[in-house]
Image (cartoon, rainbow, N blue to C red; front, side, top):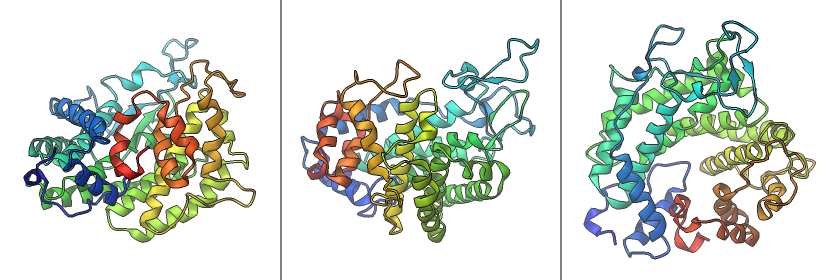
Length: 393
């Protein structure tokens, strides 16, 4: 049970956008009554937060050498699906092998794993703080945030000019922005830390300024514009990032415009009437990428609620929509032995647990609840905490 004295002195609803703030507030209230429905997920969160307390701060300065700009403060990473050309003495230029990840993209030379670990730990700690009131979580989350985003000696420059570079081809590309999607978790983490003495108004102002600069870069740089023009999941995640950062920095009109444009620019353009996604089905992991794009658009639909735009029920003139996209995948998740007509990778993960709870809440289809309940450990999944018990399957 959460003692009333431990509840953080924050507003009734936290300033978050990827999760319904009213639902989080309700979750915290239920935890104060020792809700058995939420206990497995809450215990799992606390265990994750305790692990995150042991994570040392990392920064872009930890990589062995600077990217092409010569500035180690610039984020840099290597394209994951590109490998040295065995026919060339120096391996250059690298060649593409879709679905086969080059270990170079995740080693110490790449900032991608460091940003991912930082964003994940910060969000875990901030959520645990909001729900438990334990300042030790807020203090460490704030420390990690300051090292990556705020401290002059270690802060990352607010750009992705050198993300997912292809050796011998370029020093960075727009597609690399897929790695910045975790910045949205950072924004919500800051909202969850509100009211903690460990996260000051100066800290909040500094992070808001940083996100504003990154948002401007994403809208005006060549790499940012290239990612906006992407037709597949990259374009979807671009819109989700732009919308979230716009909301975080108070640019409501930009957020609304982006969500409204996604009706035709993303949903109508990416989905057929039967719910299939041709551009994702062409990938090596065709099921995984179909799910990945639905995740992006579900996240965007959630953000749309903040600006009064309903993507959940939008349908294109030929009947394409988000629910149709999910329903296209459902039979293959219900029956893992069912032949996937677009099979390329025999080891595909057909789990849809990441979207089922929210889909059930939005659409009310019991098929989603039934499938979720067949997922091992569904009661301890973190998304249980994102909905009050009455809405949690």
